[in-house]
Every structure is written in C-alpha cells, then in structure tokens.
Image 1 (spheres, rainbow, N blue to C red):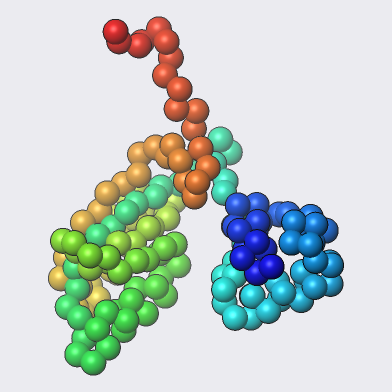
Image 2: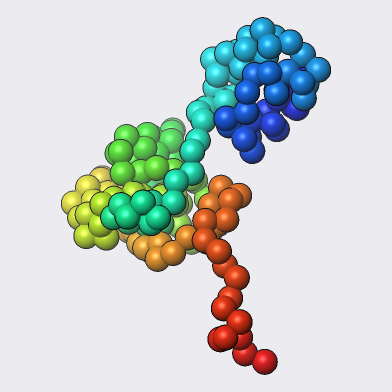
Length: 159
C-alpha cells in the first residue's frame, strides 16, 4: 500500500483520501493514518504547488548557483550545508559530484537581489571558496510539468 500511496501523491498532491483509498484498496481512515505516519517519518516532506509566476505578472528571478567549499574535518560538507540552507533565498540545495560541491536554486525579486545575496551573504561565509551564478531566463519544464508551450511556430520552421 505504501508504495502505491506515495506514487499516487507524488504526481498529484491534491488527490483526495477517497481516491487514494480506491487506488490502494484501503479505507479512508487507513489512508489518513498512513499519510500522518509518512509525514512524521519525514518520508513525505511537504506538498507542492507549481505556479507559473510569469503568467501572474509577478516579477521574480531564479538562479542556479554552483558553490565550491572547503569541507570541515570530521563533518565533511554537512556543517556548511546547514549554514547555507538557513537562508530563505535558497529553495533547494544539493551536494553534487563534479567541478563544484553544491548546487543551489535561489529565488529573488530580481536578478540584482540575487546578485546582492551572492556577493554579500553567500560568498562571505567562511569556507566558501567560489560561486558561479547562472540566471534562469525561461522555464520550459519544472518538476515534471511543462511550464511553457514549447511547440515552434511553423512560420519560422527551417527545412
């Protein structure tokens, strides 16, 4: 039941307990109890709504920031990650392999606000060696959902 339940809500967070009960061949009280348990165990970490802010007319900027750091003896990257995660501008953070250590997704009201965050906050943390900022110019797909219609206008199609 747990795997079916998690798969169902992963792609549709607003699905009703009644529909989840039907999918998993369970009762509504069983579903509600299992969801509560999954939340307490931090298996379900939250519910997400994807909003296309461009369509709302809300000015917003997003960036991907690569960060190189000096790992701390005895704690590796975890202590540095704890410091960086506390900033509300950081919406997601990952330890990665490759030419940098962390990749962060940052949200701000403008590119300037993000640039100020990087220069005044992020880059001044002891142990941060360097940052590389890439601003997100247009979103086509996010969290598995198409954000923009990516079909090309046939008038401009090249043969």
